[in-house]
Length: 534
Image 1 (tube, rainbow, N blue to C red):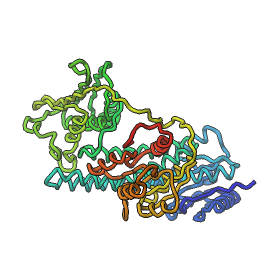
Image 2: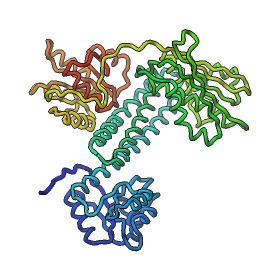
Image 3: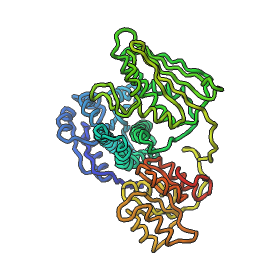
Image 4: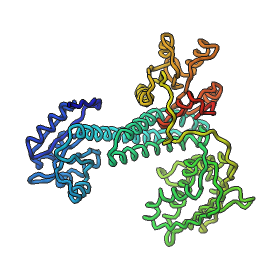
């Protein structure tokens, strides 16, 4: 029986290294049948280094046992180039002993293929490695773009005469980044659901984690301009503090900073945004570290938590250091945006302003106590209000009861985003059409009906708001098509008021694919009590 595999990956350069000509020809035929045509083959491993520099392959198929140089020795020669460019290596071997695998893994092997190999397994492993490389390179590009955008945006902010301009600048940055980040996260999640190899699963998790870090950076900047509400949940302050210390542990240790954690066990849980509080503690611990590393002698930082004295209904956090202290005239200004005492290039003056805004958003207070040569103590008081009632929301791993397949129209001018959503909905059994703006959507609706429209809010020709108003005009009485709004925009007051007025659910990009899939499910089962944003 012949098994056909649909390969839709872009052209890839593959280097085959095997001293057996028959094995080389077999691999060439296998790859050519699967649609890979840019191949280079070697039977002499001594030629690999020069050929790699010329070809710059996307994947290396490497035999383990060869004369002159075995596969591990070849890897040791290539290691600097492979690490820098992330080129996966699929090791071909008939030696399945633990010693051989350990030696190959230590040298940098990405995956194994045991001889004699199954053709279907070989192509699937090759495809997964190439897809992982594509996602890795895309993430690296997005990270470079994010770093440059943040640098450019920060420079513009520093040159601005009015802090009021900050909101619009950050909104533009977020809109430009949220769409590609949503696409990157979505494809990573789809890939993670399709691979079973533990190593590849781990790599997709690392890519997803890095993408989410980019998302948090964007959202933390937006929080400074109060452009988004906190994403509240029940959190443990001690756990968040420990996470912040862990994040900075290497820098603290290498600068000989002693960290003392004096964390009370009887703290109440807070209803708070864990990512925002994490940002606060990272900023404060980082500032203390910066002050201490300029000191001679003992360097000590103490982080203390206690229940609030008043009815024990809150939490007090103190972060103290034995640094040089903060002069009184500077204490009056340290929470101002753009005020910094750090040298040019080492700080923007946004950190403590961000901390104050986050703490005040949580109805708390932050203050500093210090005197020259006695160190500084930052004190935070956070209330512990009763947890508000919330509707049940299905968890990521919760199995949802089946619903009948629906017809869905996806409207988004970012075609990659539309295709990603279509793939996710089709995986749930729904029939999906896509179009690039509201005007195209109205043309589709003139010829057929849909159970649901999933639409971006910001598009050329006719945006999501215009589409919704036209739907209201065409369907003045229920039933009208159900609608879910998506936005990569920073929600301005006008946009927020529009979305809330429609009563339709909406999601801010980037989001987990599971969120939109569950939201569609809830919409048709009536299991969601939320009229608005998800």
